[in-house]
Amino acid sequence: MRDRDLRDLLLAPRLGPQEVEARLAPFGLRSPIRADENLQALAEDPLTRRGLADILPDLLDCLARSADPDSALDRIARFLRSAGSVAPFVSHLKSAPRAIEILATTLGASSFLTDVLVRNPHWFHWVSDPEVLGAPRSAAAIGAELDGALGPLGSEDRRLDALRIAKRREILQIGVRDLLRLASVPETLGALSDLAGALLERACREAARAVGHRAERGFAVLGLGKLGGGELNFSSDVDLVFVSDDREVPEALHIALARRLTEALASLTAEGYVYRVDLRLRPEGRVGHVVPSLEACEAYYRTRGATWERLALLKARPVAGDLEVGRRFLAAVEPFVYARPFDAAALEDVRDMKGRVDRKVALRDESLRHVKLGLGGIREVELAVQVLQLRFGSERPGLRERNTRRALGRLRRARLLSASEHRGLLTAYLFLRDVENKLQMVSDVQTHTLPADPEELRLCARRLGYGADGRADPGEALLSDYRRHTEAVHRIFGTVCEARRLGLA
Image 1: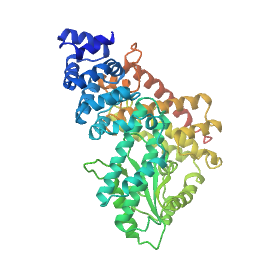
Image 2: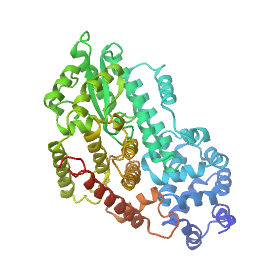
Image 3: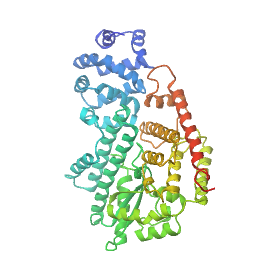
Image 4: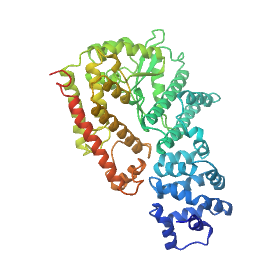
């Protein structure tokens, strides 16, 4: 269709419904009349109408490539109206490289990122800057900007809200780069983890300041799970463990700091929250001390630590507070994690743990759709890696790597995984983590399940880039790849966890 035909939607006398449908339907718009109403409403001002007509062909092309063209245009209209004056943003869309693509792709994929932009329309100019968009933001750059934002503010509430606002802005940049495929899956996971580290460090300082703690001395925050491994999702909890090692600071003050930090991260205000916090991985779980001492941790793991705790501690990493105390914690628990034999009983513990999870997922009829816990899901990749690390990591320190992707490479170089096993687990892991992120970035909800509804599945597939060629049904293509990857993972997981393979038979 010629550009003039499209521009005439706005510049010619109002077209009839059939002509509108003929011109807009080729761009994947299922409700062309509603789309035309949105465009006409945005173009009420004559100056805006001319500018919008100029960019309309490019806008429609970008809408057609977005996950949901109809929702994208609805959200673009909402975003432009939120700015107060449409004309300056239309001018920006004409002048900034990729600005139209950024807007259509992002708003067509995520109601959450739409809300971020609607609340702060000026951030669109920032995120569409080629320098901002062109590379991951370094932890140092994020930290410096956080320090600048916190500097002039007074009350603790305002300072913590500054962290919540900063998180939204950084998530916008990470999300846009991810959706435009300017970042690889590992880069996205690393960027989300670097952001979390910077925010946790500043939140810890603010909490220490509030309770009168001396610069968090003797108090360490350990990140476990995906935070520890540097592979957070868009809507991850953060798994934290607090430990202390300073007898000059009263225990009550360490506890006050831990509680204030947890509240600072998880409390919900008009600016949102920083992170949901999970403290269940600490010694003795929910009933354990909030801030155990290093001596208490060492005694607990030496006498009562379970196999699942060895698995969890493989990813432990100091992330905030007194980092030296965090490093001493890692040294104290290393014998429990690696020196204790991984024998047939430990392998049976892993199998029992996995069996309990499998049964819970099966009861929800999600075994073949749960990206994280289902058969062949992310957890099976992680467990395959962790079992091999525990079994052989005592004699081979080079296997002690927190990050799943890098650990897979080390296991391959150690010839504990064959080339085909390494390739199968790695490609599946990156695919599944990409799917998980595309599920979670829609509404900032911690979900891990492929949609059962065909339309929702199609939209998820479109966010992942399926359907660009127009040949295959996006949802079916996604399901086909999902089954192929998960079947490969489940097969390799079963092989890796055989007693004979591990030298335990």
